[in-house]
Image 1 (cartoon, rainbow, N blue to C red):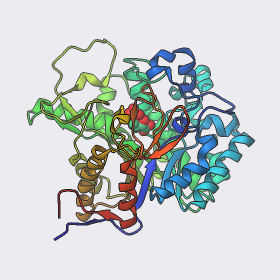
Image 2: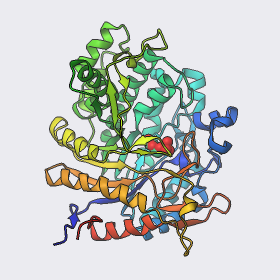
Image 3: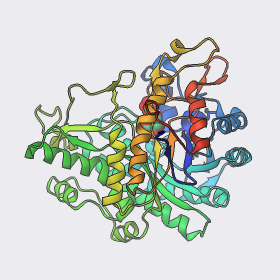
Image 4: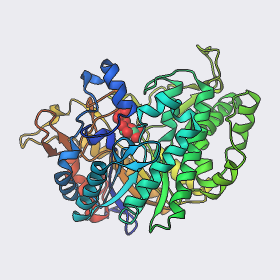
Length: 468
Ligand code: BGP
């Protein structure tokens, strides 16, 4: 008996990417913090490859959407670059060439029967706003983001029907203010990180408010990197550590996005520690009244935590004072990215959404496996035989399917990514695509996983390898 897994009707099959990781720099009126970072510290990027060309999507979008159709996609998420669409950052006035480009993108997607999901922000703050105002620590930047969002909605809101306010906003705080792996590369600035998180939540709610006030024919959500915090043991100390990590890393965005309030226990701790964010009196109502229509949840790896055992290397307040990462022995690792592979977390996430977040409609908005040196796996027909990627996706999809059978309201699966794309720090070191990108010629070649995905999408499911 075959054990075919079939997904709900209308399920989204496709992939995610972002403007800064695919488009290339050409003709933008502003630089993002990532462009600026590369200008001044190119050694931070693998082989010194920067964000200037990436996939050159700006010149290849037509062929790329045709390729996505060939991969069986019915949907694709990318982001608008604030630095490309907006000419005047203070007023939100658009740049005509940016407008023309995104209109062309919308048309090319439509021509190929691919539903576009537009995200407004993928770590790519205009550099001038960091210089002038201190970036997301500034409330003025929140206001400028809302102007940008309004411009984008009014230009494209009748054509694009699913919008996302932010991709992984927690990364902006973690990478920029706590652990220093994205520009501005600050470390240990916990109080600033808390203010940034607050402003990102507020910016999302205000953009949702603007979107709804414009009576557009679509829905709007947020994409979060939900990394479940699994405790090392059931000891009270480890459980407390994982509860704090869960509150800070996940619920700090999930609660306001879905329930319109911040996690109470976390707020108490931040208050006690003297690092609570500054807010205005009208904010609570804005947050309460402008929750999301749907969630996108990105999942790559779990977070394993334990009670702190080592001393912190900073006297400043950082969330890590309440937990420490735990390296579980015998964990499965993707050695190229150093991330643990734990597919069951997809099920745990889905059940958490069902039980704690009113089973709000959600989709798995990123999942994938970055592998270095994939040219090793080219077969005699010239194609990369990435069966490891197929196995990775099948395992995650099996857990997702099980969650759906148990009532989770998941409406889609997006892989990271369609065509090998550029990444923060790692540039093109690890490849994630269903199609390989030749950096010399720009040629795209479908991998084995691309054919597999097409079949999955066409059949709206698959028979897992190993079952018969
Ligand atoms: C996610 C980001 C993406 C993408 C992906 C893969 O967190 O939303 O932008 O880059 O991770 O990670 P990386 O490129 O660092 O390997």
